[in-house]
Length: 141
Image (cartoon, rainbow, N blue to C red; front, side, top):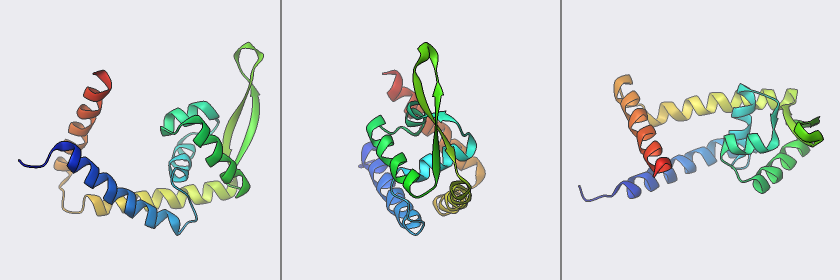
């Protein structure tokens, strides 16, 4: 095999990113915002730092993304007291944010259909398991 794993991964990542960008630009979403909507659709009320960790977004970038989403009326922040009497923001979807998060979910399903159109379910499951193992190996190194 002449290609290295990193080359294949970069090619797949670039193709996925391009297709994702095309899909989400039509919804006026910047990169990163679909991940936030996806995760808040599953569970609201994350503290901002926890949402950043869940989405694998650096905290300063999360602050910027959330500011833009708040200006668009997609999210609202609520201050909460946390341990030690400190205050933190918890993030919730607005009605418009929920509507858009549902559309994002449909687009993600459509993107997955494109990615796996030639795969049978067993091959898809095997691929997911293998990629999870690669990720675990990298994280445990």
